[in-house]
Length: 238
Image (cartoon, rainbow, N blue to C red; front, top):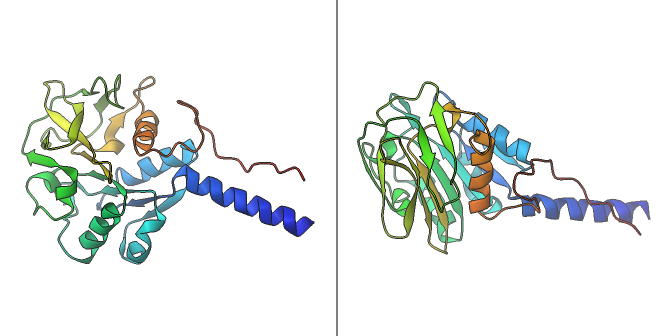
């Protein structure tokens, strides 16, 4: 009987982990100024996942993850994506219904544009950004406003293409955050650094933004809006 109860608890717990959206944070940016902050927000929201500065060990199991978060950093402390095994694996992941968030500045306009970039439907160009930045009405960032601490003013302007749409603009109306929903996969691209955002009042806190991103990726873990609680194992009565 005890073994049966344990087995059922194990099955239910695994099901809850999957429903919560098992994530991967890949943080190759040298300063790691955003990835750990984002991961901590997801932990606080009750999501489960992994953090790594090297994605190589995960390439044969990307399908295990409901969403992947990539942090590339800003020049001169940035990681440059290049076509090859990593990009091919990430593209295959999206082709099979995956969801990717990617953050960086030069990656959208100055660095080589890889096959992965094509999935974001973003046209990037050099820009000068004026803070604060604001979410866009009618999107999952509506009502958000952030100042910054340490962010450079030279950040890429991101123009959406095809099915992509703007989710963040700077104070002068330049787009710096773009989401894309093709029905086959979803992507989000930011040119600003999540870790530099300054928290104020809801919904203008980093945890609110992380929660909204997860909601866009459709992994609610049975939680209601604004409910930041760890997932709990369901009690089973026999």
